[in-house]
Image 1 (cartoon, one colour):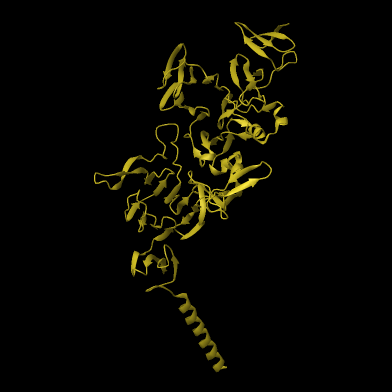
Image 2 (cartoon, helix red, strand yellow):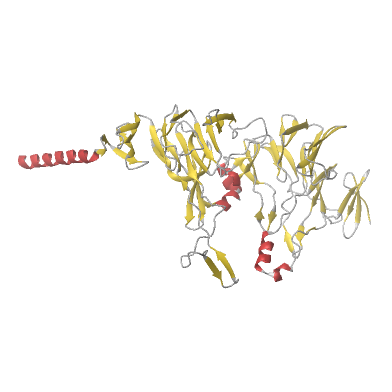
Length: 580
């Protein structure tokens, strides 16, 4: 029995020593618990107990000495980041980009991000400041300070647009423990690419014959594939809550929008499906294709951490929208968000915000005033008795507009623009905001209708039979509405209309649909305008059983309602005086 016990103990000791022997790794001359090969086979991140380092066995030296901080590697640009709760250090040991200054080390507190645009322009965001590359007096490239970072809000209601980079690499704190790692590069399509040569006939371009059309098509080289190495790293747990092989489309203190990219060998990015993960690592939705993502009010509210999200009126033809924007509401305040631009906030949060999609004008309520921002200029009138009205006009070579600032009996008119007037200022649309009896009335007259893409495709396909029928276009580009302040801030009381006018006992609303003659792509024909009256409780009113009118004319003490069948005269309290 004693002999068996001795054998068991000996075997156990052998297993223990063997396991400990195998647990030890060696990278070159360095003994470590484990290692991760990075830039080349001779370089790796090595892990030794509670410390991490970067060692190059060809040079037999530590590039980054052992540290208790986390060490992360950025493929593609071959950067290292040493990160802890106090600072971030980015190391660039293999700078090959001659457009950017090659510094060994960048030390920041909260964020560092390099962006490269398709034109080759490089910018650096470093702890809230923006830098660009300029040659110094010795003609050596160096970083020069631009300004406070453009992606942070300034005094404007509108947040400046983010950079749209071809390549982006960097890191930013999401909170005290989470780091967002940004490291991606878009597929590159050479705009000057020539057709590839034929294998059978090397002196000729490769061609494909389409027997149905009788045409030949040239074969062009596919794009240069990009990459996605973005992720979210937990400093405290020292692990990835989002693995570093994703595309991060959007991130905030609420969470990150993560994309899984699928590529076609010939065409590049084929599809991207998105998942949203909050800062606690919980998945709120997954597997959403991009079109579904930016068309959904519900998903937009999750991504922006808003109480609600409302699809703004925009161009819509057969359900195909030309510009997706949402009004999001959070803590009784509003902002405009553009999902297509990585859910960028077009405006800051204010008491109420209206955004004109045609011209990019922003209107909002704050304190006791109604504000408008047009270009770089800001205007304001009192909410008590003020009206802001804007009439834009195109002249060569830029946009002009006339602004009416009305307070009581006083009107100030401003005409703004820097182009050459080739014609008198002509109104191409009107935006007007005013508050009457606690009702915020927004008049944003109909936008222009864009050509029907389906119709154009039918013409290309030679589907002449379909071209002979009349095609109707949805009128969802109406953007006028009435709002009233409730317990949760300003709430929309009417559906979107063409125009709205206040009368003593309610409101006059107008609507209009459009149709397009199939034989003339640019001939957009307007249906007659239809008028309606709603009372002060926003209920539709009928007069002699009629609720839809072809015209409503406001006279001195009466209102004339015209329909196809008859004309009705009512007083200013909505009572019928006579019918003709």
